[in-house]
Amino acid sequence: MATSLKILVCGDIQGNLDTVFSRVQKLLKKGSNFDMLFCVGEFFGDEKSSHENWLSYRNGTKKAPIATYILGANHPDHVAQYDIGSEDGFEFCDNITFLGKKGIFTGSSGLRIAYLSGCESPAGSGPGPKHCFTPGDLQALTVSLNATGNDFGGVDILLTSCWPKGVTLYGNAVNSEKCKGCGSPLVSQLAQALKPRYHFAGLEGVHYERVPYRNHTVLAESSKHATRFIALAPVGNSQKQKYLYAFTITPMQHMNSSELNKQPPDTTECPYKTKNNKPSANNDVGEQFRWNMNYTDQSRNRKRKSDNNNYRPEKKQARPQDWSCWFCLGGEKVDKHLVASVGHLCYVALAKGGLTDNHVLILPIAHHPSSIALPDDTAEEVEKYKHAMKEAFASSGRPCVFFERSFRTDHVQIQVVPLPMGTTSEDVKSAFYAVADGNMDRQGKRSPLELTELPKQTDLKQVLAAGCPFFHVELPDGTRLLHRIQRHFPLQFGREALCSKSVLNMPDRIDWRSCATSRDQETKYAQNFRDFFKKFDFTFDSDDNEDNDDDEEN
Picture: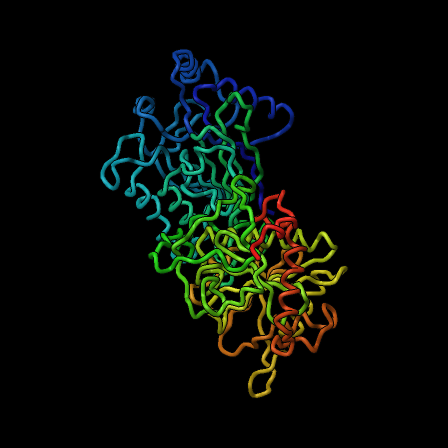
């Protein structure tokens, strides 16, 4: 059986050696037999007293209670401390060792550790200051990986002083404004290449444990282990944030793949994979694409929120519109009597031939072919509407389902269908799988559709290429199913599943065209939905009320 190791990692010590080693000594006395201590961030302090204390460790008067490994200088003032030996690493004194400027080593236990000292050089690709690393250092560090061929699976631990740039993307928020844009792009590249199971960093003055991220693309690559990024605060910080992290680890080379690659439930996409998730470009394309907010009389007396929920006030946008599109709000073909709510970038409309009288659509105001093509701000407002819909239907005890078919349509349509009270996600999931399994092709032959359950927090942009046709459904509990459309696909698939006996039990309403109703009835349904949704509609002021109708023009 493989032996696990107990590891300690410390943030910026800044010369406070006695504080750290005293705490480690207490842990050891309590029976916590740690194997080693790694230190990230600034190890040395600037005060004279910390320098004198360091000399007491150098001359043997004091001794570290455990094997301690440190990174190199992060500031030019501390470079001299490391000039006594090689940049490839050396032993300062008993139990305190400088790892080196960069490197990867495997211990006798099989634990594989990579490290990179210093900060990113401002000199770019040229030679940098001694306390900095350059692209050339990263290249040298990764050369050893090439020798392993395609079998390289990653490292157990990565130690850097700098944060990786963009690490908070897809993850939990960091409680520091300065950290939201901090970090080194080179460290991000290194982390993506090395695929560490644990990545530790310091320097930014805060403790931050990011939710794990995966090192593979869902549905496109075989499963790999997840990475945990952990930033540690300085020793003795006034906010009493965590500076010492303890964990137990079994070297990956001693683990079977199923155990190693098990994904924690909160695992996200890799924050450094940006190929299919590029930042939104400027969408302003000219005055000819302005859209008109005066879509119907019901909009005239709306008050827009300017400070609640961070909602931005209404303003004209220069975003592309296709005047011949049935769903571009500024187009000529839009049935404006169906519109129930208009946001800044999206709107809600009653579905024609809906499964129920409050079956609605969430649509972008501008012309976008699918949800994976939406700019970030528009996608954010879609999610805001989805949240409001869940709350609205939950208020009457009903769950709801969201689905999108990006096939034979050129404008995003997120279908929102409320379900009967008591309907479970398992009921809906079983219905979709049953209809998918019984699918028939155009020749009448059974042709099952493959539905894949997506891991939580998976971004569709990470698993689907731009322009790829797909069907995606989100169940009441957040479970999401995806089908990549290859050739033939039944256009009414989503409706057919929801019309199943175990869900809506409406076999006669599978085809929306057979559910057509009069314009007057549609207008009535739309008004009823507006009244129902108004309490949850973030585009309304909380003090907006029905009396506003008295002020409308006759």
